[in-house]
Image 1 (cartoon, rainbow, N blue to C red):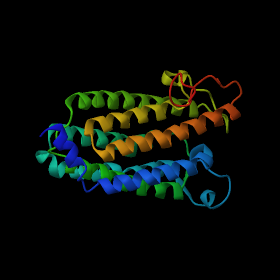
Image 2 (cartoon, rainbow, N blue to C red; image 1 turned 180 degrees about the vertical axis):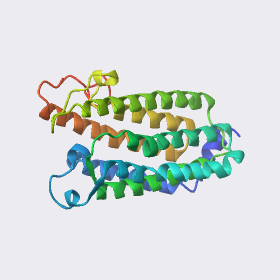
Image 3 (tube, rainbow, N blue to C red; image 1 turned 180 degrees about the horizontal axis):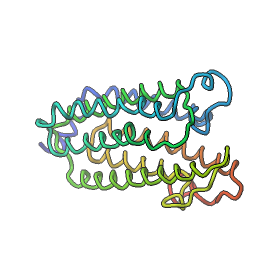
Length: 261
């Protein structure tokens, strides 16, 4: 099938209206979150409803992330024989990320911090939607031509991004174990030499890679969503560190090295 026919097929996808709606919601959410940081982690309110209803962070990460693993792995298990090689690899990469995020990452959390139940429910609903959307989009395009060069570049970017993400999370956990009370320590290892939110940088690179491998509108929307949400979150964390940590390197970028952002 030619690239032109492939593009025409993409415009007729059942998931396209969902992608268009999700893009609008992403833009609205970005404007809101610009002035109201997502209420979890260091931005959890000290009082109010969110503070009153909390659960273990380990349990929260497992519950909220597992739909994005279980839904696509179910689709992959059923349809992998009818998928092309590139479609199988694309969905497998998505599953790999959320396998690590839902089953391995929670077990590595060393602190006893709580997570707002409302934030967990919100993330759970998003992962249900996104797991379904990415699975359906790849299933719809299982027989559509994918650019081989973009697919290869995407695989490389995904692996690099996942390595940066996992390594950065590991370094943050190591620092957290050395904290005294609410004291924050300055990370310097790996990409933290260049950015304040290296874990977010890695995940953004992952999803750009995923978009290039799957080459569906849904995947490109998710890359856009991740860059918007995580980029903004990284910027907010950067400003938080500058205010809270004496001697924090102000010339360090938030998410993108050497750009000031």
